[in-house]
Image (cartoon, rainbow, N blue to C red; front, side, top):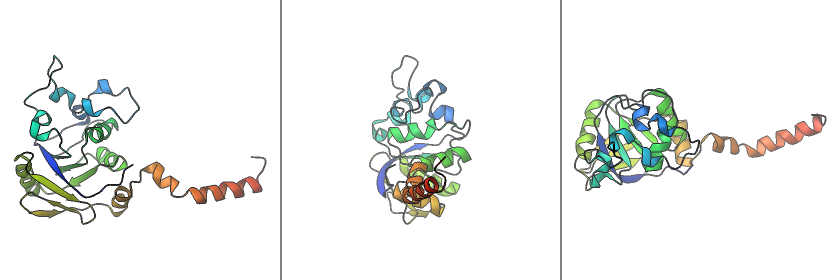
Length: 201
């Protein structure tokens, strides 16, 4: 997993509430176990018309937001079924951060495991960020994980809370496998000692 670095990015406004994981990545795209290639199917039912062409009214099809790296969303983002394909699709599209007033627990946890920063802020602050995002590509939000701040294009800054362990994992690019590999020397030592103590195993 890549290390999460502070960045300035375009934010796509999605003021809908209860955006569930089926809206994020519809069920017909869940057959793969690969984390790559799902970005094209992100929000497929809202993003494409019945004939497969792009829906011009959907925010990510707007030229100003095609390179968005942040989503500012309504309440209860990521609710519904616990499909990990949802953060896979978000990450593959290029989204690094999702900001909302609340997240479904499983989706929230899966974001951290896949290098995405979910930020929870009070409603009034999310409304400020939503208005800023609506300005288009010329208005960029600054995301600073180290200092735990989100700053608008006009310089207004909001502090967010994040679990210290999860923050460490994002900053160091550590998923579950990466965390295990940090203990590789200790694991090798244990296996060597176990092999000597119980050679019949």
